[in-house]
Image (cartoon, rainbow, N blue to C red; front, side, top):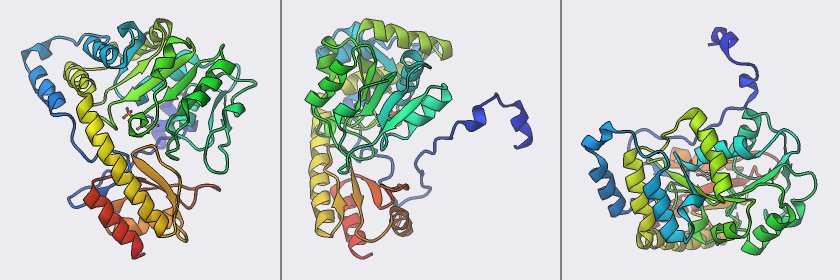
Length: 353
Ligand SMILES: *Cc1c(COP(=O)(O)O)cnc(C)c1O
C-alpha cells in the first residue's frame, strides 16, 4: 500500500478521507447512525422500478433524467429546465463545488455542518472559511457577508437538526447577489420550509434535494437540484466530464414515482416527526440537552457521558448512533429517528446507563 502511493497524484493523500457510517453485519441491530428512513419507500416507486427491469436495459438511459425533472416540475411548480438530476445529492454537491466556486475568495459554511463540505473544498483546491454557529447552534445570516466566494449550508443543518427560517435564507441570498448560494435541503421534509420557490426570484440560488431521507430511497442513489437554467447548464458540463448517464433507467423510474407520491412521503415524514418529538421530550426528561430538531434525527448531549462513551455503550447493546468530537461537540451525539418501538428501546437503554 505505502509503496503504491508513489503512483498517487500530487495532493491526493492530503485530502482527508470521508468516513461513512458503520454498516453492521448480522441481525438485531437498531441502526440510527446514518439518518436512514425506518419506513419503506413508496410502493408506487417500487412498482415503477420493477417495470423498468426488462429488455429496455439494453439502451442507455435518457441522460438528463427527463421523467424525474417532469415529476419535480409538477410537484414543486417549477420549470423542468430548472431541474438537474444526480446519482445521490453527494454527487450533485461535488459537481456544484467544481462548477460554481473558485480559487479567489473563500467558500463560507458553518463550523458545525455536513462533514463532506471541507472534503470537497480540499479535493478541488478551493479556499474556504468556516463560520461559527451561535452558542445554541443556530446560524446567523448576518455572518455571511464580506469576502465571499460562495456559500453552502444544509437547511435544516446537519448534524445540529436546526432549521433556518426562509426569511434568513432570503437575507443571505440578497446580500450576496454575485455569489452562488447552495442550500442543501436533505432534511427539509421533516419540518423546514423549502427555498425552491425562491429560485424564481434569485438567480444565485441552487437548492439540492435527495431521495435518500424523506423518500426512503438511500439505496437507489437519486437526487435533484433546482436553480435557473444557467446553473443547470454548468452542472451538466461538469457531470459530462465524469459520466453522462448518472441516473440509470431503474433509478429514474423509481425516483419519478417516489417524487409524485407526495401522500406517502408526507405520511411517513409526519410519523417520524411525531416519534422524534416524543423521543426528544424523553431525553430532555432524562436530563439531556437536546437541540430543537426539524430533521429525522436529534442532536443531543448526555448529562455526563461524552458522545464517544455513549456510542460505545450503545454499541454493546447493538444500537448504532453517531458520535462527535471537538470542543463544542464532544458531548453531542446524533441519533437518527427509527420506529416508535426502536426509539422506546433506545430510551430504555439510555435510562439505564
Ligand atoms: C444525507 C445527506 C446528503 C446526501 O445524501 P445522498 O444520499 O448522497 O443523496 C447530503 N447532505 C446532507 C446534509 C446529508 O445529511
